Length: 484
Image (tube, rainbow, N blue to C red):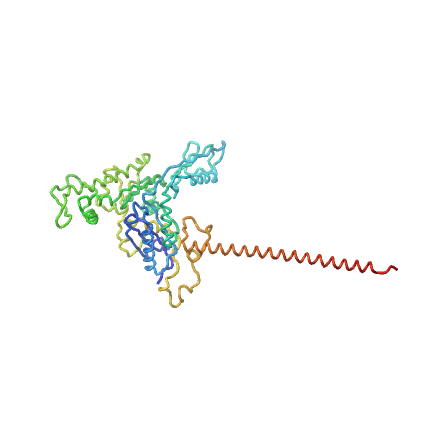
């Protein structure tokens, strides 16, 4: 039976593009209906699309496979964006007020609008995290109702490159897939793996990916810093491959023998690790290669933590992503950062039910896409596919229109489209046709109105002529009558 109510999320990662469809239940849990993964190493680098044609093909394949598994068309999808293009910048907006002015919500909204309208070269503001407001000399989270003469708004603007935005939209447009909304992947991930206590007391979320490592710093429930480091698990693999082996073999060795921290006294100098049937490498040399690159990643992560929060991380460091599966990764972070509280988030907080081994593995690699799925709140289902239509109800095409949210069935004007909704080529053509039709109807009505006015004018002229003729006839008759 075809699924009629589901949410679809897609994450574009450096090593793979993941598509997932799920249904939210009344008890708050999520049932995963289908999972599809496609290798993306050939067209996405550091989380950024650089080959549009291959990305379009990948998105089309994922949508087709998900649609086949669900036995239903997919009207729109939620998309998670991240990668090296993402960065955060602090911004301050100041407004001087007359003495004794009480701050209103309109004043706060004005500061937020001014910040949103900030222009950055080759960058576009994707999201804004309000830090706090400075009312005269005191910091407040909610300044409304406070009397002051100077109001200052502190914001954290999260931005991405314009080229990345255009490439991503071009890919989904070419694939004829409508975007319900774009979510910032690190924020969706944080909402799904961090507890309220960790966000409130201060913590660092580290997502160890294939090509990138994303660092998010939280304090008092507010995102304080976000950065994407262009280093990840693939860098360790490439270092191992320098031992004159294929990267596929290097990846296998990393997964089998890789360890994030090994005490010097525990290293066996006589142990040889086999590369293939004929070659092997010294255990110490292999350990030095792995730990050397991992130490570089950890040092870069810790360097990105703002100094004012480094001593306030009572929530500790939370590790997730594929790289968090490396043996003793928590010990390595503990030794280099001196933060004792280290937690590895293997799975999201939400209750997830699924029969897919990718989900049940609980290895942290699906956390981001599950976080995007959890944030979605609109039905992404389209028409039931014709080959799976109910035989007792007639073909799917003959059924009455059902879903008002279906972007493909209900063409909308540009003003009706919500923020983050990218119209497909078919939608654009339908909207343009509708506009042309409306313009033609308006022109016809206008022409009809002018014709009617001319007719009325002609009638008036004829009436005047008739009355004048009658008057002249009466005068002639009067003058011709004999006098008595």
